[in-house]
Length: 80
Image (cartoon, rainbow, N blue to C red; front, side, top):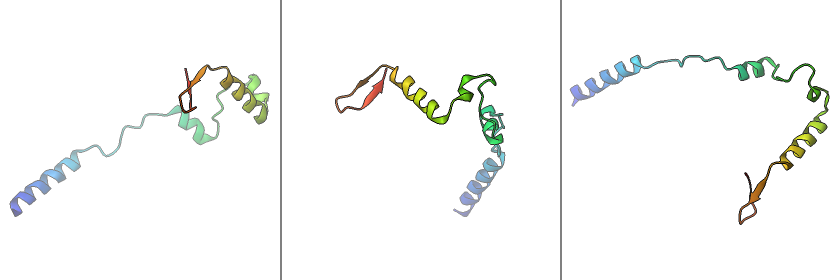
Protein backbone atom coordinates (compact mmCIF):
# COMPACT_ATOMS: atom_id res chain seq x y z
CA UNK A 1 0.00 0.00 0.00
CA UNK A 2 2.83 2.38 0.84
CA UNK A 3 4.55 1.57 -2.46
CA UNK A 4 1.36 2.35 -4.35
CA UNK A 5 0.99 5.69 -2.57
CA UNK A 6 4.65 6.47 -3.21
CA UNK A 7 4.27 5.69 -6.92
CA UNK A 8 1.13 7.81 -7.18
CA UNK A 9 2.88 10.65 -5.39
CA UNK A 10 5.86 10.45 -7.77
CA UNK A 11 3.59 10.44 -10.83
CA UNK A 12 1.58 13.32 -9.43
CA UNK A 13 4.73 15.29 -8.70
CA UNK A 14 6.08 14.58 -12.19
CA UNK A 15 2.80 15.66 -13.77
CA UNK A 16 2.71 18.84 -11.71
CA UNK A 17 6.31 19.67 -12.60
CA UNK A 18 5.61 19.10 -16.30
CA UNK A 19 2.51 21.30 -16.38
CA UNK A 20 2.85 24.82 -17.78
CA UNK A 21 3.10 27.31 -14.95
CA UNK A 22 2.26 30.45 -16.88
CA UNK A 23 -0.08 30.95 -19.79
CA UNK A 24 1.52 32.72 -22.71
CA UNK A 25 0.89 36.42 -22.31
CA UNK A 26 -1.17 37.61 -25.23
CA UNK A 27 -1.21 41.37 -25.48
CA UNK A 28 -4.70 42.62 -24.73
CA UNK A 29 -5.08 46.00 -26.40
CA UNK A 30 -8.36 46.82 -24.66
CA UNK A 31 -6.96 46.18 -21.19
CA UNK A 32 -3.75 48.04 -22.03
CA UNK A 33 -5.76 51.13 -22.91
CA UNK A 34 -7.90 50.77 -19.78
CA UNK A 35 -4.92 50.29 -17.47
CA UNK A 36 -3.22 53.43 -18.77
CA UNK A 37 -6.36 55.53 -18.38
CA UNK A 38 -6.58 56.21 -22.13
CA UNK A 39 -9.45 53.98 -23.17
CA UNK A 40 -11.39 56.42 -25.34
CA UNK A 41 -10.81 55.12 -28.84
CA UNK A 42 -12.85 57.75 -30.69
CA UNK A 43 -11.06 60.01 -33.16
CA UNK A 44 -9.87 63.44 -32.05
CA UNK A 45 -12.46 65.21 -34.21
CA UNK A 46 -15.40 63.00 -33.16
CA UNK A 47 -18.60 64.83 -32.19
CA UNK A 48 -19.04 62.33 -29.34
CA UNK A 49 -16.08 63.89 -27.52
CA UNK A 50 -17.91 67.22 -27.36
CA UNK A 51 -21.12 65.78 -25.89
CA UNK A 52 -21.86 65.80 -22.17
CA UNK A 53 -22.61 62.62 -20.24
CA UNK A 54 -26.32 63.40 -20.18
CA UNK A 55 -26.35 63.88 -23.95
CA UNK A 56 -24.50 60.62 -24.48
CA UNK A 57 -26.95 58.75 -22.25
CA UNK A 58 -29.91 60.24 -24.11
CA UNK A 59 -28.31 59.22 -27.42
CA UNK A 60 -27.85 55.67 -26.09
CA UNK A 61 -31.52 55.50 -25.05
CA UNK A 62 -32.62 56.81 -28.44
CA UNK A 63 -30.52 54.16 -30.18
CA UNK A 64 -32.03 51.41 -27.99
CA UNK A 65 -35.50 52.55 -29.05
CA UNK A 66 -34.63 51.93 -32.70
CA UNK A 67 -33.92 48.21 -32.14
CA UNK A 68 -37.00 46.05 -32.80
CA UNK A 69 -37.97 43.82 -29.93
CA UNK A 70 -40.78 41.60 -28.75
CA UNK A 71 -42.05 40.45 -25.38
CA UNK A 72 -42.48 37.04 -23.86
CA UNK A 73 -45.75 35.99 -22.23
CA UNK A 74 -44.44 37.33 -18.93
CA UNK A 75 -43.56 40.73 -20.37
CA UNK A 76 -39.80 40.23 -20.56
CA UNK A 77 -38.43 42.03 -23.64
CA UNK A 78 -36.21 40.23 -26.09
CA UNK A 79 -34.37 41.93 -28.91
CA UNK A 80 -34.62 40.64 -32.47
